[in-house]
Image (cartoon, rainbow, N blue to C red; front, side, top):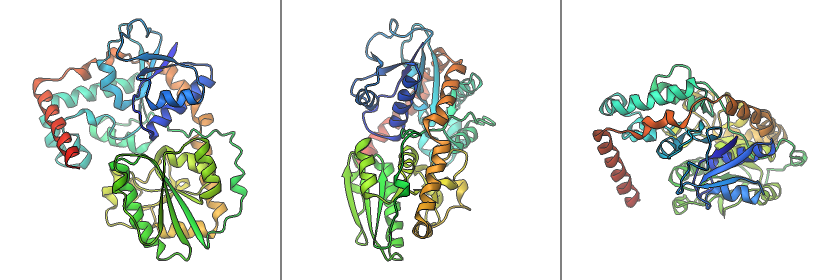
Length: 411
């Protein structure tokens, strides 16, 4: 049995890194790995850099001879439609990983309104045939143990939208930093009285830059109450880099693309505190940094004009990796968290480290992935309905595509 990954993105992001790290783990545990897609994808480049052997299958070629019925496809849930449209003659098994709450609703024509929670029932009625088609696929995947959610937020959003009941098959995301990583950084004394170096790591696309700008605004306010100078280092690349706000209250340093050993070395020598969401904040916590999490892009609307929207990662539960709408009562201000870290740096850093070490490392979660792969019973043919749209639905989807292009051009 080969485990074939599908995710053709060429950029560096949390989902890309998670899938690549999963492949490294599976290979280290004796599994045969493959990749279906294009050679210039991030996953392929990452596996090549780690000297991880894998079978490559170009998705533009005939898949009938390359993939057998004994093989299994492992992919983000966002790839469901793509997999459904592929011609797998041997009908392999499939396991899908919901890495973002909106992975599946993007298949719908009115996803914009669903994400904004605007007239949801009305727009679902307009595409009710497609809605129930996707709902049936999701329910079938869950019943055959072939769909897993990375956290409570993803499970809850999809359960509510598709009326799934309790859809809590969790396969949490894990860091690429090994549990065996010898972290002596935690033992180093820290003096944050003069300078505080913070680090943000993410793709710099429009969604992530909007989050970053919210943090920059809050950091400006917090810096007024700090006696130390503040430097915010931003690691990442993307087409919205020019939209990052600049502050007169603190220094902002753009570091470009950086990961792996280079990032670890930079953290060890230059950084005091990490801030962000998702896979990157897990990695940084395991490198010995106090890890501050904030709302993801999809939850920012709940925290508009609210200062209490930050938490240390050790205060999150049920595998969450960002502040969600149900944390409104427990989130605190950035000033309060920075003050807590200044008061007892090693306690905060150690708690962040231990939280991620115990919940989000390959050694802890890898066995869950292996079990999930062994239990998955869905096959590619179970996704076929995703590729069958009515004339009206195709018209709606075409209008959505035109609208997105207009918005993209306007930006």
